[in-house]
Length: 197
Image 1 (spheres, rainbow, N blue to C red):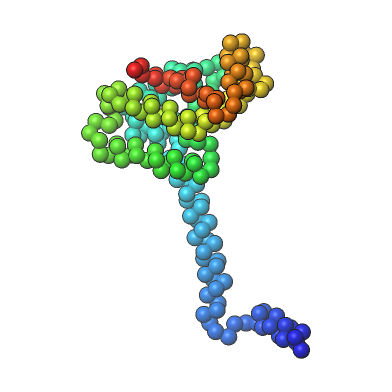
Image 2: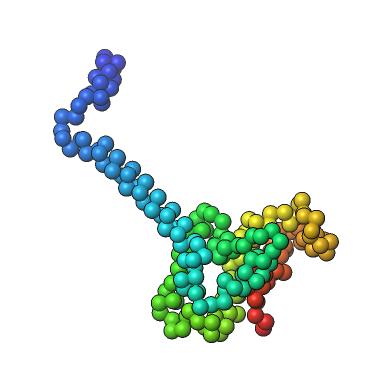
């Protein structure tokens, strides 16, 4: 008898619904999938578009930031590689990336609300504060933006690395993890001049 009840329940599942509103369930699920897919795709497009140097320079167009990078080893090197703003200022992927994108949007607010934000004078007057914010951020993520490109500082070091640099990196790596320095502790000012004081 229980087999008969199960069989009838199973067959009822595949019958055409008697109430028209039951058709709304698969239609609603399909629409939710479409809206979700469009939302994910749209988010990716916006994230990519707002991670370009051209986008960054819309608010920093009158600052010397791009010229500073191009004059540094991150823009003028024998490998012919020029780093982008996002490679240094945004963590590589994941939830942290989204959070940092939201935090960085303050520059857009500054551009619209702070008198003189997009001037070299404002940059020079606020350079130390901005540099310290960037330094503190890089410390908080253990300079992962650096090591996403410079992945061979501890093992398989390049022949071009100076002996003293190899020794310092090896010595640092031998320390307990909570005692280690992170890249920015020794390499301040590699892309933008770090102000004294």
